[in-house]
Picture 1 (cartoon, rainbow, N blue to C red):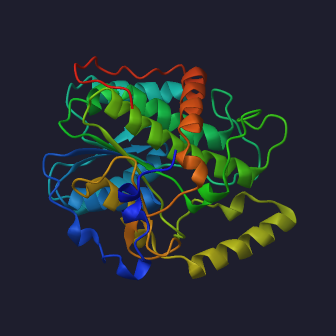
Picture 2 (cartoon, one colour; picture 1 turned 180 degrees about the vertical axis):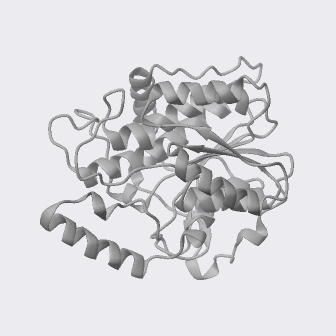
Length: 333
């Protein structure tokens, strides 16, 4: 269903008219607890630093404990409020996801902000998660779907919880491989990556729709970093001739890309802009670079049918059902 024009105005503002939003525009985050996945490097680390610098209590959900320890020192140095902490989390293992969520939920404190940032990209070999899913679909989408669902009680303790899921410009080339979403028959790594990033947008749309239908104040939004210099693409994982080509590709990428500080701005904008409309999608003004603004997405990401179908598939694969509270003002959306 096509969105009403007023809802799309913010997505079609000409790039040159986009306001120059920077970390200086982030409102005070004192009293906010923010969970950032993949906060040990790249965009996640820059996001954690920026939120901690504004007074937030940052929980760095990371898989690599050694890298996380180093990153914790950096975020601690930037913090102006509570000391940040590391939460062990491997999104490619649903048992780890459950343990991480339980660790936070047992405290009984609210989680005000969840940034689903971690991800893997275009893995050259077809790897599988601990639960047998395609590593890209399992990590980028299913892991975050499960984490968000298990953290829902903690999120709903916050008066205005927000979930930000990080997608990619690669979502433009994405479609859900409904016949084989885990790529068991033929593995096409870039299509698998694009599928996972489209899944991030469909998940955001359905999460926001269900949150409104149940009368909660949870807001779900998405963001993408454009072309940013991070270690997401590991050329060292290639072999033979492919390794040479990948290394050249990586050099070109880093030459054209904006910094990870700039690349983190869209997700920070999505996370902290007051009154941002649910299911907004934020990215660089010129798509690959620039200051953040609301932006357009793959037309498939607007499909309610695709979003609902993906939600049901995710629920079936992960075994995680969202426990929405019964509300008197719940309605069909």
